[in-house]
Length: 305
View 1 (cartoon, rainbow, N blue to C red):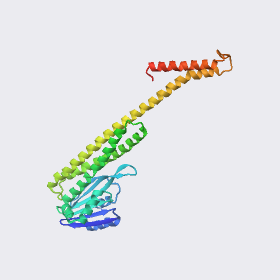
View 2 (tube, rainbow, N blue to C red):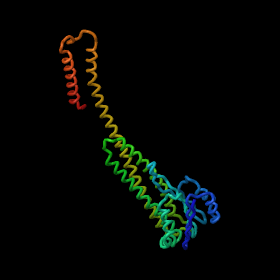
View 3 (cartoon, rainbow, N blue to C red):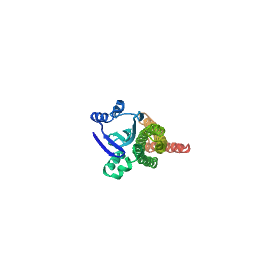
View 4 (cartoon, rainbow, N blue to C red):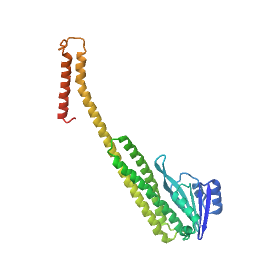
């Protein structure tokens, strides 16, 4: 648990990482107008994105993707934002690099503090959300690279590896789509929000973030359609390869059937044609080879081979 504060006129930014009950109590003491349910939400590990409007503040819950290299999937990382006159409070688990980097830049350089906090709390909120949204683009670019790699390997003989990669990428895209789709209505609410804390001139800025989210949503949807098409193609190719193998095995089985019959008959301890002939084995083998040749010629003529 870490609480860090940067004060730069006209905004004070309070950043809380891994909030504890003590942090929540301190926050309640500093901002008694915060609703207890909103303070309870910042301790929840699973909270759906939302925008709550109070008379004195706004409360935002947003999710942004975070890559899990062990499970090979993008998971939602939550950030909670309180917007108060002259104050910005962010609560998160410290895994969102743009948010952590923005605070560290403000701590280190006066120019960064002026750029982020010197234009009011509205501009600070817009800048942070914009940086977090823009950070999704590189994640989707990596997904695009994986999709293109699958496209190049789709017709390789190692179908098992391709199908496994398709399943992993499709799971990741589904997770990204869910995260991105949930943020769109929240930013749209910010764009049209008439709360006294938000200036009317911020409508265009939040509209720009909404446009970025629309673009991200379209990219994720397109990747989802493409990967589903690849999955269908991979299933078709796998079925075709299985059918080819089954056809060859069936041909071999059919060819072996008369040969097995002949060898079984001549294995009986009874009088049979050519049984006493010294060349019986050669003659029998010749007949069997002739049967194989005739059957192969017939299969070839019927385009079964």
